Length: 408
Ligand SMILES: *[C@@H]1O[C@H](CO)[C@@H](O)[C@H](O)[C@H]1NC(C)=O
Picture 1 (cartoon, rainbow, N blue to C red):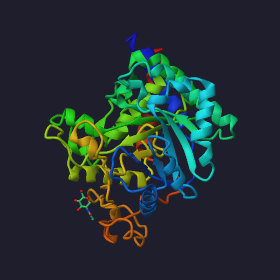
Picture 2 (tube, protein in one colour):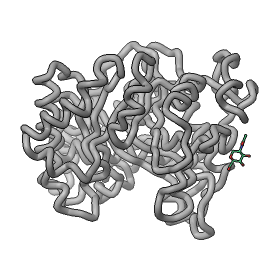
Picture 3 (cartoon, protein in one colour):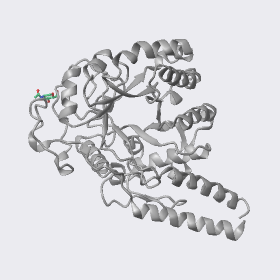
Picture 4 (tube, rainbow, N blue to C red):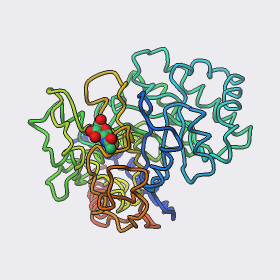
């Protein structure tokens, strides 16, 4: 019992941090984001992609470079775009002068006509095979942020997307913790995020967890189907009805255990492949459609995770197109909602979650009849309060507070 109580005390303090960081209610129209990957030789030109995004009423996208054609084509549109610094040039941006030069030549020419809202510095750098990359990450992030500030754009958010493999533990969510070998640089990075009020971005794929253990993990839970049994975190008593939220909350816990508060966790990538190799259990058009449909439904409802129910979870779906030149297993080339010829890979069935107009779809999406479209935008102006989860959290804190009072 003696060692048990300090642990509880620490956990309680973490959760108190969460609660105080979950009070921001931001009134604005929200949309799901979508990743616009271009590792393909057959994609439509950027102006066609812009039309497709407009048809889908998607207003947020991310690209994996700073492609000048795309940044020019998206000028004067309502698309908010996040760009990416390629891993290959991270080490150069370690130098403040070079970072300033990079921002001046790759970003500034497109502002403000193109709504560049964020810069992702590298992709999954914390878990890259090239371990020398990581030492350049935080200097590059800081240098780019400083350059943007100096050039008059302090509001462009600088961060980096991480793979879920940054976690040592992710189950149950309250056990979430970062791998000890990256702790030092993660601490510096989180310090930057906290002081600049910038989110932490995670690439989270329940599909990977499922294909590893299809016989033990229920498919309904992984797909986020309504009314499945789900799981209860034994420490927090929070109920999870889908694995994606459990993954995100594991990241919240990992961040809290590093001593940081108020850093929002966002999903930079999630998705489900419509095709895979025979050993890639679960990859199918049906499961892909179900996963993405459930995600859309949750986004339309402005859901937050059980731990932060009042903060709408920001999600960027992976991906807009199938990408034929991606290496690796078959699934890698089959995450797209669309084929390169702009026909739908499968029907996401958006009419079931949308009340929006269906009038503008046929010209740019050959296969999407008016019955299969369209809006991915929620018109809700306020994030949602999920009273049940919130109450259970308060109850949990109350119980632990009682234990502290009684035993400490
Ligand atoms: C688009 O491409 C897919 C996959 O290659 C093909 O099955 C489909 O028939 C094409 N649709 C059109 C309208 O060309």
